[in-house]
Amino acid sequence: MPDYKDAVLPQLLARRNGPLADGDSLVLPNQTGHSLVNLPGTVSRLLGGPELSSPPLSPVILEKLGGAYRNVIVLLVDALGYEHLLRLMSAGKADFWKENLPRASLFPLTSISPSTTATALTTLWTGTEPAEHGYIGYELWLKRYSMVINTILHMPAAYFGDVGSLAKAGFTAENFLGIPTLGARFAGRGIESHAFLPASILGSGLSRMHLEKISVHGYVAESDMWANLRDILNTPTRGSRYCYVYWSTLDSLIHRYGPNDLRVDNQFADLSRSLEVNFLDGLENKVREKTLLLLTADHGAIATPVCGKYNLGNHPELVNMLRMLPTCEGRLPFLFVKPGMEAAVRAYFANAWPGKFSLLTMDEALSMRLFGIGAEHPELRERLGDLIAVPHEDAYLWWPEKPNVMQGRHGGLHRLEMLIPLYALPLG
Image (cartoon, rainbow, N blue to C red; front, side, top):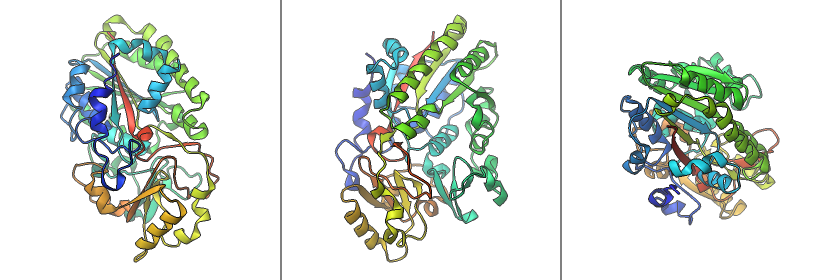
């Protein structure tokens, strides 16, 4: 069976060292062509597009993908980890993918750090690493606006409701990144681009940030998502096409029930059956022959049972050592420490959660290339904080002023969060 983990996985695990040497559980972002950041350049090469900031995937992977295609589909299943996909295939919940594996290729890749949606999708739509685009984490400190923002909802992180309210502070989603996005780059080469998103997030700030010069299609369910994609591909066009399909339901269920819940497995099985019935069965043969389907994810997920000891509301002494509440992710908190308090913060972590966190200084994280090897965003260092807490196993921190009900999370460096699949299937 063409699962090429033996050719790739050793390289993905080779960078565990120093303060993060933790057996097989932690995985750092790969820097040698086996990462999510290398996927945009790969798509561009397959479609005859421009060279991007980050190079394509390694030759080991590229040679298995074949030559040029007229259509490349990237199906991004939010929170589908590499090992999760293997388990689904073994459990009979991913029959389409298992049955087609003999003529496909399956590789493990690494996500980026932090392994979270807003950062990963920004990487996918710019072809740049987090250190370069600077859009790091679910919550992000922006000195220029004097606030911590929610990077998906585009509102102050402390708000409830009022989605998109950053506009009141002069925040313009379309201009914030200041770097070219994939749609604009492709349009300059005559490549037609389409994005299929849940109708509920159509026109969101994050979508506007990423989808310049993209034809955006909202869907209500998997049935119309696949049918709309089928109809577009069956429509003749002179040039090549990039079709991005974003499916978020798995991530929502994992947060609510945990990654190992049967509801999660059954929903993925439904998605796969719908792909066959509503897409492939009606796709014209002449279109199939020129089309490559890539299944991947922005990140994986790990089970994190709710535990009061990780709630910062129960640790006022630690909170008083910080200049503000943490940012980024509960699975990768950025700590802004009061002057002279670093030793005390380290001691508190060691006593409150022995063995559960490794604390990196900002300089240590950057020297490890935790956020990439490219040029640094000019505001990167002020956004990172003084210490970065890397959880081990199922540890996390919780600081929002609302009940913690999440049974599954992501954002950290555990292999279940960091290893994602690249399943490549030529449809012809």
